[in-house]
Image 1 (cartoon, rainbow, N blue to C red):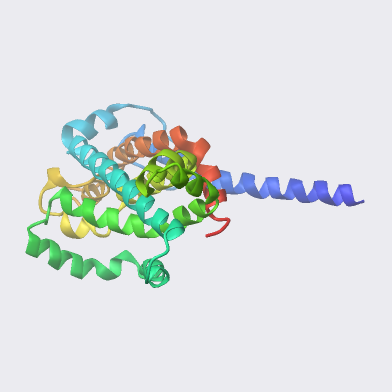
Image 2 (image 1 turned 90 degrees about the vertical axis):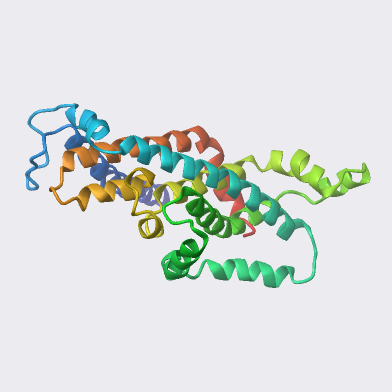
Amino acid sequence: MYNVKKRAGRILVHIILLILAVVTVIPFFFVVLISLGKNVIDTSVFFVKELTLDNYRRLFTETRFSNWLINSLLLAAVTMILAVIVVSLSAYAFSRLRFQGRTKLFNFVLLIQVFPLTLSMVSIFRIFLALGLLNKIEGLIIVNSAFASAGLVLIAKGYFDTIPYSLDEAAMIDGANRFRILTKITLPLAKPMIAIVAIQSFVIAYNEYAIASTVMTQKLEAMPLAVGLQSMIEGQFGINWSVYCAGAVLGSIPMLVLFYSLQKYFIGGLTEGSVKA
């Protein structure tokens, strides 16, 4: 009887997971389908009568998609590198070092996450205006690096807490300083955590729209991908949904490549990083 209930429960879980997977995949499937169709779309019929790659050609010839994609890749890559450095150093300090105000500072970092990024849009705009950073990718890199790092410190600290401190003590007995311990011992053991920070910070910067749409609206060629695609919808000459969907499909490829490249570390890092976080 127990085995029957257990098997029924397992089947139910699999059915629920299958439904969730279908619900998740179907929208992306329709986006791909629409990108291969003509411009005129009947929203009541979810199929394309004639497939074509012309929308992808028009995406590169009639829009600034190449500029948008390069801008977003540059923004996400630099943000990812800075976030990995900042999160690794700060999480190691919170996990291993004992200094005055450590708990209060860590609580302040956690408190920052309570407030959504949109609450600071006006302040960020005024700062960008004063520093001459409007319509410049450098400003977005600074903002995204700061907010991504603050949100990932908790997971990174939790992962560092799972690494035995005895390894640090043994290295210090051999004469190693803190920086050498971090780079030669702790970080090599924390590859799953680094993968999480890399993926999450890349996705945050690559998909960020709220701040980018506020400070990157004057120069079409300087826009990141999310703002550039939105400008296609807000165009005064009508919306070509097929070309827009072609941009959405190509724009999703970098994130898919990054995730599948690091997925073997990603799951382990999430699990172990949440143990003591």
